[in-house]
Length: 393
Image (cartoon, rainbow, N blue to C red; front, side, top):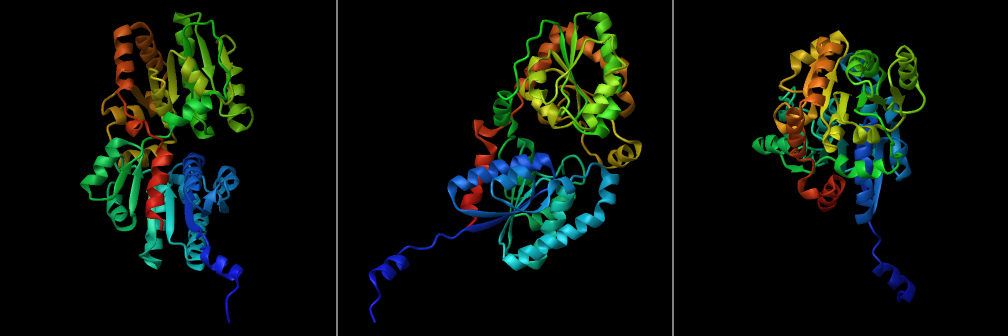
């Protein structure tokens, strides 16, 4: 019996295989990284994305198996409290991997959970390919994690050049992709209104985005601002709260009501414009310091957490610096004030030095300009996606 022409045509048309990729991220910063990679992958081929994430990944078509709002854990003590939930989630992910025969996994940051998951994945199927975007901070603490990474991670994508050197020495397949803020900031900046400011100097106060940070840092920062204003009566202090509502926003407004003599302005969701417009930043340690480095702004980095968390961290930390600009420059570009050092007098003294000593200030700016953020001005998400496209078959 002869096949019809229609049947022959159908058989010639090979059905395009959709590749499955499991993506695990556990917090908003990780989702932002993951969603950029997903967008770039979609330009290259057909994929089915499954994993943990939020609204951004869901909008790109990911099947969400757990929302990141249930996964965000801050601090060692909080992580212990979340242990039972995360253990159940790990089992759920392993079950999905088995049932759907998923062969490729992209883990994004979230090392405490993701490294454990990688270990378990390799146990159930050693052929699963595991890619990791954003290295655990083995250079800061728990370097022995490198032994596990060598066993379970097929390729590591790192944000910083010095991390690439570490992995190459340990013979772990690695690619330096750079930090996405280099490309994200100009786009985000266009969404924020330009600030028209007549006051000088302009000083940004950025006590963090989490309540635990803001409640520790805002008051000493404002007390320092009072002292600075006594020297610079025309100064203006800008506070970019994370949003225009919520616990942090309410705390900021309640606190600044006690500082009516200060020339203060709260600017919800305008951290980038605040950084761009400021002569000096008093800033919480974290990713925001890298954004400040992008703008080449002199900064005073403050870090203060609960004493139990700090005690545990101090036993584990291996680096001389905690501020990202200092780590990248491999020297102190910005002064770091830790725990009891976060005192109004210390903040004030460094602020006055930066504002009054032009040689000191210019040296800081020069060092910030030399910090490499990306390799050859390429978009990190595109570098990761192009590499994954070659590796996922």
